[in-house]
Image 1 (cartoon, rainbow, N blue to C red):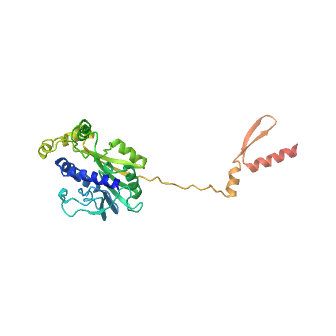
Image 2 (image 1 turned 45 degrees about the vertical axis):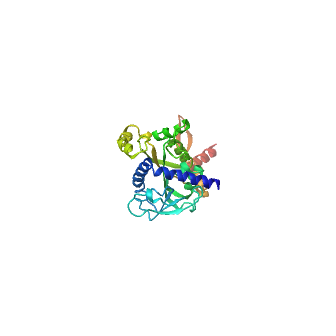
Image 3 (image 1 turned 180 degrees about the vertical axis):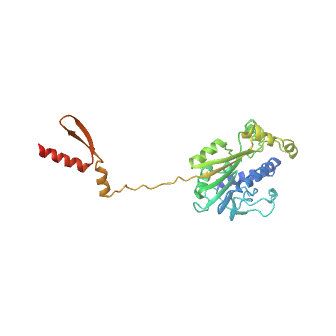
Length: 287
């Protein structure tokens, strides 16, 4: 019960942030780049974990697409066109109710940061993904202007991002994925505006999106990472059975050296095996 209460409080804090101007700013960036990222990933089953406010699978073309979240969609935060991906409610991301190797694509927007056991969530995603399946992860970058502002909470300043979030640096996340045999193939940073709280000031800092992509790309406040599940193949090698005839032929010398002695000189001649045996018999008779 304590874990469920903690998770509910974290979800409430995240929902409150997403309704703020910087939250809507981050949502718009993630919606745009997630849609472009999953458009060319093919398969049969696509799953989005959490944050139903983002329709991450809207541009994906798999026949079965759905969102599994611990809360329903907040219609106030969804501004997409058309019908939203179907949302199924689950209790824990650490215990996904899906069969092993049954999902081709998993999208996780900010799930690891607010999960009680992020390592277990990744292990569950690894379990349900098919070999060569894709996982897309988004998160807040602790090494950004927003992350620096959040660190100032220790100095007595008010929080900017949800306090319950355990923000994961990108190199650390790559290490976690590598331990599970995932191969990172794409990544991107965004949301370079400072930690301002009004739409007016966010609009004034809009120019930093292009400048940040060019001059300080790793300082974006939000990152997106794509990885592929790799499964090493195994080739069975049996005993090298050989027929008796093949082994016998392999042991017969191709040629033997025989020394012929005449009255004036000695010469070396290379003969096959049968001829060498015949010459040796003749020499023994002469003696």
